[in-house]
Length: 311
Length: 257
Image (cartoon, rainbow over all chains, first blue to last red; front, side, top):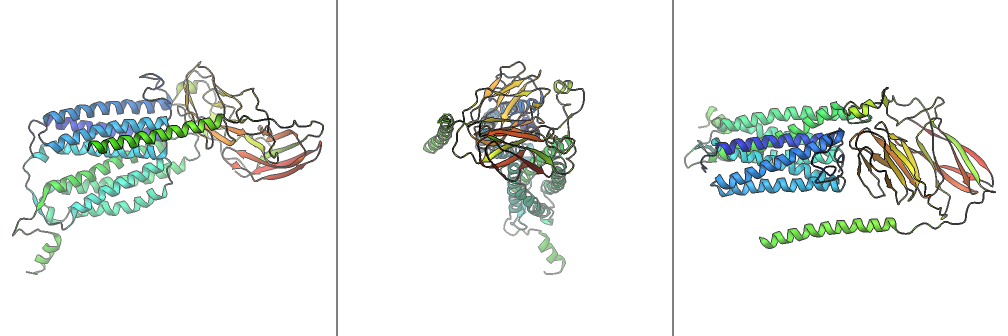
């Protein structure tokens, strides 16, 4: 489990994950400003490395610059992990992150060359989220906390916090796909709106599971659940604001700042929501362990039984 | 493992090649079969259709275009720039409408004009807002601005393209191989810049000015269906008109905002 001298590596992984969130914001700005094809060529921009940064070119070329930096950081991270990490699966994860960022760059090029085909743009948006989550996972796995000797809380699959966390992450990822499909004109907003009604059930169910008495000793798990719940509320409010601003400015001759602000914020907080759900999954697997023979798991259900004098 | 990777590479390569072949075939199709002109119209019997396109009701409030993000564009205007989607005259005439013969010309073909129709980018606005050309007629796109534009038609039936045009660059000369009413043209550098290019198989079309008036001349006698098309309001209902020898008929199209 341990991998020595990885404090610098962990900090760099956290930095790369934060940079990737910035990259997601830059990408959302491109779409919201309708600037996806402001630079008609790829990989160069107007035949150069630095075109005039005016109008939509600022957003599109700015996104390419931030993405290039993310690619360089990921190369450094993957090489660093391969040299420092003793965990073979971690070395693989580093290379997977690198493969993802390369694929993401190619998908970005395909969107330009083929004039934003909706499903390629959706794939670009989906891979961006997956790449961000991979970096969040790398940051978690390289942390001192993850590698320390934690006191494992006995877990007997009741309440099913792990399952619920996994389902919450899958539901959020699907919802992000539906949002991207709407933004890139693959289909209308209805599926995303239906998702906005369904996904909170998965998320709140996972979050409420973390508050079970059984997990009182797993403070990290409880914190993750609480954060996920609160970020979900912010995300729902931003979703409503983004939809309102879009409808209010639909006849405007150009993308309006209010719509751009709420839509970009909704996209960024959506990525954070997914990252928190993934974090909850990882933490639930790290801090919860199998019940040893003779051990009693203090779930709310059996505590209620104890208090009611069932024994 | 290696074999799987090889298969994956082959599948991707195949998909790319199929896509590339598809594009080539489309391009071939677009350049093939030049039109052969049929018998010329007899001016002694040709008639005309005149009329007006009107907006029934007050137009939506004109939206101000904000060029603050691009000072080069903003500097070219001394007064606020308004969206040109609704250009309405004093008597309710509606401008920027393409009025065209939709049906009635049979299999008659027409020579493609060689003179180009000009679309200029001036003050970070497309001028004019709507143009109409015949199939394969050249469209000449100019950049009169001191800033970079990209010209990006988004057709449904024609080949899509996207070209950059820096200040003082050469004119872009393009044409469209299939009838389409109308192709939106965008500049993604300046997202308020929108224009439309209507592409027709024949020369019987007109774009209305602010008074909404149009006149389609030199029509051979016959039964025709006419349509008016507006960038926001779309196509009107069909109007049937019968033209006799040397006859002129008047019709009116009415759009509701």
